[in-house]
Length: 305
Ligand code: BEZ
Ligand code: FE
Image 1 (cartoon, rainbow, N blue to C red):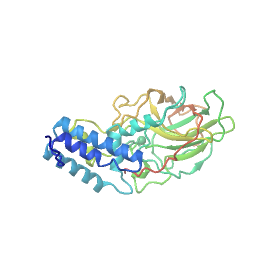
Image 2 (image 1 turned 60 degrees about the horizontal axis):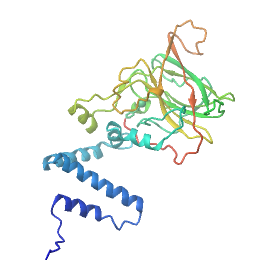
Image 3 (image 1 turned 180 degrees about the vertical axis):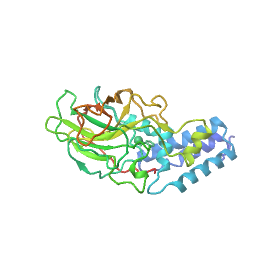
Image 4 (image 1 turned 45 degrees about the vertical axis):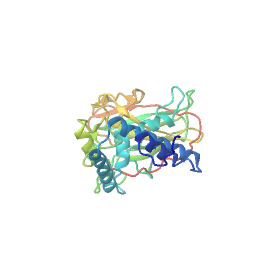
């Protein structure tokens, strides 16, 4: 006669017991998430025959991630970005109709509450921030109809590779601003030509990149969140087509449809924006919004400074 032994000792028994421990979870979505997480974690450990030493190292890495994370630094999001999880979640969340501007990673340097700026106004508050860039275009719906009153919430790094939020001494509103489209759907602002920069690599994520022979660089880009009532908010980038690292963005965020050509302009070009001196660049960039409403507002993800 077969005996029933309540003790679970083989790897398969241990996995079954851990999965079954959530059977009574009253929230069906939480039950699904926890049981699937346990199955995949156990499968990972089994697949690689995880050693006790490697398991201890993983715990130490998670501990270091918690220790370095604070109000200005968010190392957990950086892990998610560097492992491609942020872009995967983004892809699963945003199925857009063809032609709509694609979304990409928010990143840790977004700070809500940028100042509202006028059409064409510069968001460059410090001298020497980089080559001036006039960015202009329209916000449209899928049929090409302009959307007045759409908001573009813009932020970027300067020629020193840093966002203002990474520099305690910086003007808080340097290289960020919110712009509204005019009645004909047009917008314009003065920025600087973005430059490639490394993601913060002095913590556990940086150590992982170095240990695995990966670089920490992102290609040059300007961030924007575009919102209008009746349309899905899009969190996106404009990438500079001449930038290094377009083919190896360390957070996997480049989409070909977001790559644009900056046009080089001379100091005496009559289309120069007020206040722009010396050589500058211009960039035309239309944005197409998909109809719909947002289910969740964009929130401050915590920063990685
Ligand atoms: C960014 O583009 O600001 C960014 C995105 C992911 C990780 C680090 C920085
Ligand atoms: Fe960025």
